Image (cartoon, rainbow, N blue to C red; front, side, top):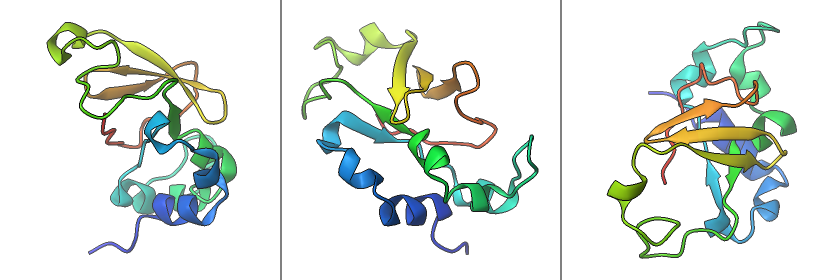
Length: 123
């Protein structure tokens, strides 16, 4: 069994949670514990577990949803999920970078995230 996820530990010890208000306007892209403990950054070869403590890494894994999604609404536009399925949507991260969400996948836009790390967005 793996220890506590290094990303989550670093995130909740940082000042970022106070910047994520209201909470229903933000989504965390949490890399799996296994990928953080076993993976290395392609450019620096530093372990992801070490990088997870940096403010840059943490803030690039928080998506801002302007206006948020009210509880009970099936999609941001008020329509149903089937109508929006398959359409790519672009979102900004907390540090101003951009990611694209399509179906259940998150793609970096111009290198904003190293998405060799598996993430599980909960939208």
